[in-house]
Image 1 (cartoon, rainbow, N blue to C red):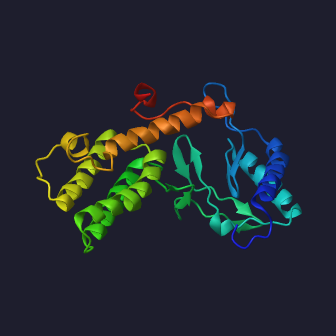
Image 2 (cartoon, helix red, strand yellow):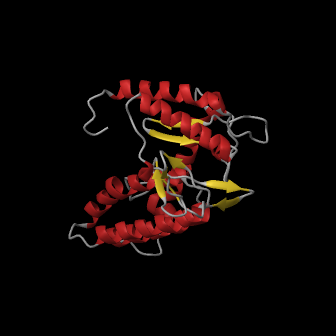
Length: 254
């Protein structure tokens, strides 16, 4: 929206008109429960199409292109990505916008709403990337000449908020989160001059320390519970009925 003269509300309304005028041409993917997903979902100018056949995808893209052109806007194929899955395997099916090919996710990974999509389609790769970024951030804070309490302040307001969204959108095993928590705790003990044998209960509990931060495991559980409540209390009935994924049940924590 940078440099755009139209208001965000008017832009959102215009995109909603385009979506409603385009989604009727094809049907969405049907789940095993019989529920049919909408072929188009969008947030502002971030649009996702989901169809069951190649012909439906081409038809939907053609209709979207016609409506976008009518609204005097245009798609940017270079900033778009396509992915085709046949019988659980990726295939190199190419789609086009005005004879311009859309890059495949296997060629160029893309980040949408804070989540990376690549050829593997597995969150395990993102777990390793998240751990590397966390260690890099901790090392950067540790190299500063600030006293220990200010380093903890940098962790609380600088690094931890950047970790919360990946922990929310990715399905990360609890063992990975606990391993990441041990890394964070080791730096906190180092900054505050605490013994390495101090347990997490003594570090994060309501005792003599009273640290202003919670353990990463507790924050992870809170983000998942918050996500569960956001989905189950959504005004969109289709989102309310989405099946839960992952081994850790947020409902049990609630």
